[in-house]
Image 1: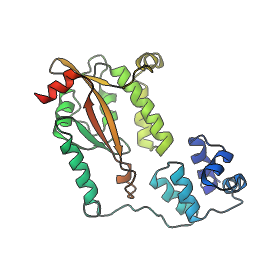
Image 2 (image 1 turned 45 degrees about the horizontal axis):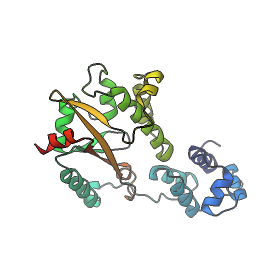
Image 3 (image 1 turned 180 degrees about the horizontal axis):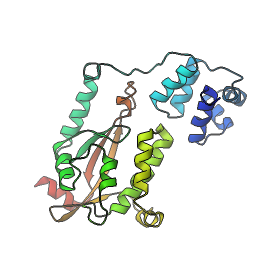
Image 4 (image 1 turned 30 degrees about the vertical axis):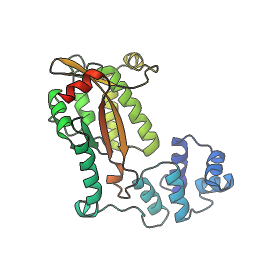
Length: 253
């Protein structure tokens, strides 16, 4: 059955490219048990579903859904009062954004909606024409590569598409994100994509035209995987850093 735990487990396992034997070794159960779980000959325990989902890096929402399908109550919360229950988390994100000044920093959700941004990030988004967008990928879709303030647009988008593919494999995707990914991929040909990605680069940097000059940035991403809430747990904080001395000097002035 399509909506059975066995089918869900089969999809989880294949997304992470594990054979039944490999998975059984990693979580210390027999390969026969994995096979029986996938075919429905054995029923999973609540602890086994959580153990499998956690090891296979699926989202908390997917684990909750698998628990429900298997007849168990969800384990991860979806707070009705996030502003109260998750106040320490929001405070921590605000602290990261503020402490990262004068460099740009963003908070993005699973669909790459822009949840929050520091002043530096807002100024750069305004400069490159992204100020009226609430979704970062949609902003790139609406951007015109030849007129873009992102100088290495093909390179940046090719890298982002690869990142989205990897994120989907690790954490799953949503219908909205899949549609955005397809629209963005349609704007860059496979030939351009191959040219854009240089595997010899030690740092994947984005070059942006600001005030008539070129500045270079790379990102460090902090995931909120330790947060048990199913929505906030998928947030990520993107911290942008200067990739050269010129960019560093620009932000020190």
